[in-house]
Image (cartoon, rainbow over all chains, first blue to last red; front, top):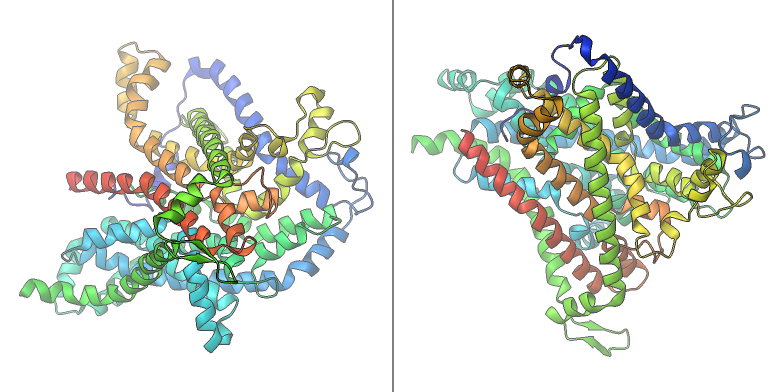
Length: 297
Length: 300
């Protein structure tokens, strides 16, 4: 199972052939009813968030919480943007840098694990994989004191740089897995072997043969790492504060205000989720590939 | 010797990552475990604990931790069963390729793209405990409007022993789509010939699922179970966002650990707690990794 490529799961999830069977018509009626019913339930929170974010703070009451706004108001969005903008920028820097760095390391590692089998490779690979599953609570206390130590000599590391380091390192296992599985199927051993016979060195092969065919796997890991760094809260809570933290931190602060302004809060939820939602809508199938690789295989 | 020459450069390329994982995963785990055995003294120097395994006995014996473990058990059972049930159901509804499948798939999966903090903020409001015509907001208000006022309840903040079952609702909402995607890939991996053959033999749809499809999906079901199970053990953000940072009724080991460190000033107990959490996750994940490793080798 483990050798199943992650990128080709995209093909797998998309139906092969449409079945046109007359006798199944009765079944599809109920089927659609159920599908629409569940879709409505899944979308229900989104509905209430959008509706509330577009009401003026004065219009929000618990009695009318589920009804459409009588008058559209941008006040909630404006207030939420003002509160979240600096943290949005920090999150963008964090998520992009962490995604690029761990993807690059992942492609190097994936190449080595898939094409240059060395003694003990399986063991080391399994040790990497376990790092993907650990509860980060188990490393958080010493990581926090380590980072405080480091920051006492290099203050510029405080905040986002610290989080970039953490997400890059803890993203290595999943990126390695994705690239290893990708190269195992997409890059024939014979090509690598032929290049070696022609005298190309390991790095040279990586640069001129492996990297040029890596784009599909890069898309998957970049999206996956971007999303997980953007959505992370645990590292942010332990390693940053309200002035240096990413947008999840800022949103949590905004939402725990004493007298909640619900239109601002719900607009904040949308603003903070927009980048990952856009990525999901635009590049959904690659997002799914990332998900599937979490199942090891 | 020629062999060494071919793999040595590869190992060198791998070295930075090996070192990083070694230090930041295994080194830090080691340090955490070491500090979980530390002596505990009060600020004035009075001895609280000799250290060693006594620290573990103290935490495991404390009522607060047992309460957190119970909550985790309720959350995990309801969440895993719920996510598996809806994930499988959605996959079955979609697997034959209905028109508009792509749209349904995207809708069921979209919560996965949202952070637990963002969804937690919304679900905190949805699961507001107020009931009755003037107090009810969120889901309780919706239940009134749907003509089902008797279903109103105080969700996770009720004083029932099973209050954490309510906390599983947003978790299922967020992750059932993941399970669906796994099962859908599984269904699509099974050739249509097998189905056709069974159909020719006169097997009913149900029998085809029961005897042809489900048995082939069991490795995927296992993966889904392990992924959901270990996610549940680690669940922190969602509970923190919904219940706030200091909620006893919804406390699980992961949230208690944060409190032990920052509120209760007990880093040793926090380290013990984190180590036990790691053991619980390892108990679930390590056999799975060994199993996939073995099947991979067999497949080669």
